[in-house]
Image (tube, rainbow, N blue to C red; front, top):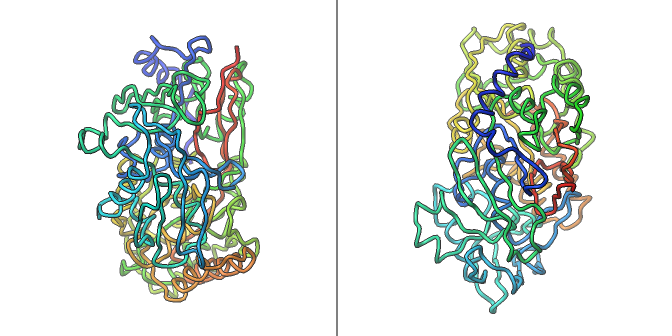
Length: 502
């Protein structure tokens, strides 16, 4: 486990950052809010990316048919209302008539249908994984459209909150250039994107939900944790998502800064390519599961910013089953299982993003330390999140990896579709019973029965160990006192309703 950087190192990192941006400090009088995520967006085209960091920017620029509120409920957005037909296989949405794109053009049913069809027709789009059940889309009237699904899908009204609506005319005119100079219908419009420096947004006065109260929002990527904290202390940035544990106490005592902690919907886990000859061995995966001391990681390393967990959804997400407990640490049993597995010390590549999670590098080191202590040979390959994420989406993590899932729809169906269902998703493990249960829970309208079906999947996962669940992350945000904004469990950075104190 590494120790936090010294004050001098923090100051040096901040000086480098400040030299690039000190000319435009965040100030309440300017109506400017500066947010410092750990990395930049991959693109500004929401049909080409599903990464959480990009989604935070997309949700400020674009609208979707529905929205997920902070309490996990489904709320209207571009759709004024909707209804599900029999067996949840036909869904009709009525869109608002006063919504406009940033260029002043009205948002039409045709734009909505085209946006969905574009994604469905693009085999390279990672967003396509969310729409595999859509069989057809049709215009019903000037303000209504209907989705016909190939199978029942009880959470479809949540799923459409992930699909941003694009202006067909502008998109086709700009082509590839749309990804750098986009047009949406959300509360903020893009002023400029300078790669690895900033995405600058300006409030859209014609927004159908009311003009945002803050004129300018800047997403400024700062990979260094210490540099982000230093920039917050100096007043250069207003919000720092995911403060590392070592800096939480320090930032809490800083004048003009508050720290908000929120139990998140994000679960940190280890994934395996079970088709890898070494990792195809169940007893080896069980040994890895038992070799890790989750309590020590969360209480000492993370200083309470995490809770051990045994499933891929957190308590705030629909589908969480309290009966599924975290795996207990048992080094002796791990060694026994390792011996029974016939493992001969073959090196296992371990890939992970080193700039995405609080203490992500340190957690990876701790996990590897535990595995090595029972005799598992691990080769660490940490990398920038922007390099890791494409490998994850394309199923090219062919050893062991550490990642996380925080379902933005606050429903277990999203990780089930992404991590467990056989097909065009990211699952390396395939199980017929799991596929059957996934289909059953999608057709189940009784919440209690649906929870029970999902719980069976978590038990099958625990028995077969295609994933090793580590902990549910408690997230800490550093926020300037003059910023009126509340952190959410789903990690979304939405600023339509944010304010700056006078």
